[in-house]
Every structure is written in C-alpha cells, then in structure tokens.
Amino acid sequence: EVQLVESGGGLVQPGGSLRLSCAASGFTFSSYSMNWVRQALGKGLEWVSYISTSGLTIYYADSVKGRFTISRDNAENSLRLQMNSLRAEDTAVYYCVRRGDYGDYWGQGTLVTVSS
Amino acid sequence: EIVMTQSPATLSVSPGERATLSCRASQSVSSSLAWYQQKPGQAPRLLIYGASTRATGIPARFSGSGSGTEFTLTISSLQSEDFAVYYCQQYNNWPPPYSFGQGTKLEIK
Image 1 (cartoon, rainbow over the protein chains, first blue to last red):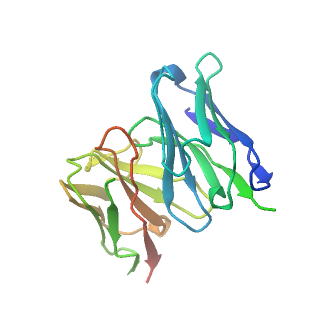
Image 2 (spheres, chains in turn yellow, orange):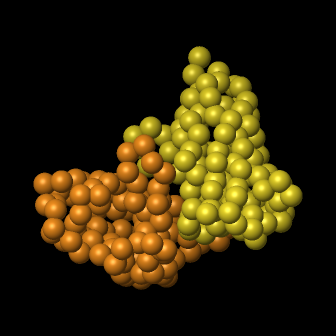
C-alpha cells in the first residue's frame, strides 16, 4: 500500500524557518518525481515545488522561490521541504504528492501556521 | 501561466441525479487534465487523469471528457459520499507550475 506521511509542521513566527518531511513507503520511491502542494484554510490548492527522480531537476512556484528548498533522499525514501523567511501567507496545509504531473497519491498533510 | 476556471462555484444536486462540472483552460492543455475530489479534513483524491481515464478504484459513475480548453466531469447518479469539493488541474505545460482550478463545491439539494 502506498503511504506518504508528512511531518514537521507547526507554529512559527514570521521570518522563521521550518523543515517538512515526507516518509514514503509501499512503492519504489526513487522511480517517482514528487511535488509539494499546499492549501490555505478554506482555500484552493496551490502547487509549491517539484523534484525529479534523481533530485537534479527542481522547480518552485514564484511565491516561494528563493525561500523554500526541496530535496529528497532516495536511500531513506524521504522528501523534504526546507522553508525559510516564512510569511503569514505561507500558512497552509502542506501535502506531499506522488508523481511529477498529476498527483496519484497524496499524504494527509501537515499544517504550517506562521503567526506572531 | 495557464489559468484554470471551474464552474459553477457551487452546484446543488439531489442524490441519484446527474452532476456536471466544468473546467476551462486559458490555453490548450491537450488532454493533460486531472480531476480530484476533496472531502472536509481529507487530502485530495485523484479521480480522473488524461482527461478521461479513471484512477484506480474510482467508480464507473465518474467520467471525464474534453480536450484542449474545455473539460467536463460527470457523476452519473450521485451518492451521498460524492458530496465534496472537486478540483481540476492541468499538467500540460513544462516546466511547472501546474495550475489548479478554484474548485466546485457539490452540495446536497
């Protein structure tokens, strides 16, 4: 069974940092590109970042470029999102999503709240 | 960036009836279109990809159609568990961003 389990969310002050992790199991993690997608409370879905199978090709939404860093560890079946210089508008549930195009499996999400 | 527009924002339908949801792209996305269902407190679930291919385990009452800029998700006979928010997403342009529609809330009439 495919499982994606996010962790690392929480409350952080504006300007602070947080690192999200996604533990993958039930499939060959190294064979899939991955994405992070976020959703502010009561709002729609927003794509955040993409990483290829090897980790060599990476893209970011303009809203997070220069502040967020996506990475992966294929040996540990893990996806990460390092978030720096956090802003109130980054407050959202962050989902780890399998596949580089459409998301066939989604984690349950982890809530990031940026507030003083 | 390709803008995805869904209509209507809210659709009220009675159980057992048919629901038709629309999604329009600001430029052609070929058939690179996915539909998701999201229930309160849950992650989105993939329903349709490639505009018309049902994902694994999705009931046959869900069907997708369209290509280019106009797409439709049809639920043939609504069950109680189908009342949720539905999102379309295009994945045609490369590199990302892959844009989502703003969602259609399907509610019980």
